[in-house]
Image (cartoon, rainbow, N blue to C red; front, top):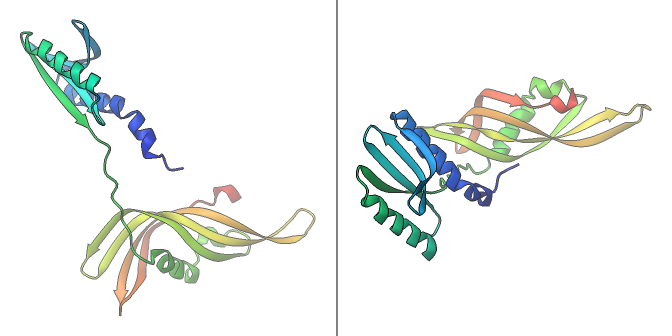
Length: 204
């Protein structure tokens, strides 16, 4: 299951406060959250010796009400001795799309000719296709390419039921991989897998 961005944004404010608090604690500060200051509440106050840092976290677009609150809190804090006011702007990390055209077919071609032991351990099977490739890493060096990611191997399994009736079932099996690719006369191909983990736990 992939978590949608909207759910990340929902908790971004709290996550940002936790991260800022951790950063200040590592620097030797005592940190408190939701600290009352006059008639206001600060997201976070970090204190070390005579230094007090008040932090308000901004996520998304500022409403006029929120902007007014931050301005008023800043004015109040700036009138206090040994206090410093900061606004932290929290943003969701940008997605980085890593993609190699036709990679599913390149991996499938190799695995169909070199069937992994995990699949050979199942009942008679036929590799059908590879889908849903998601890359975590892509490194290109000269003509060599290193890819790391995950995907789905679709297989057709020939099974026998309890009453000895033969039937074929389609199964989708997740896998993780790290592979070295090479370009041979304009055709991309797998040189070797340095990691290949196929999850057949559902069949054990």
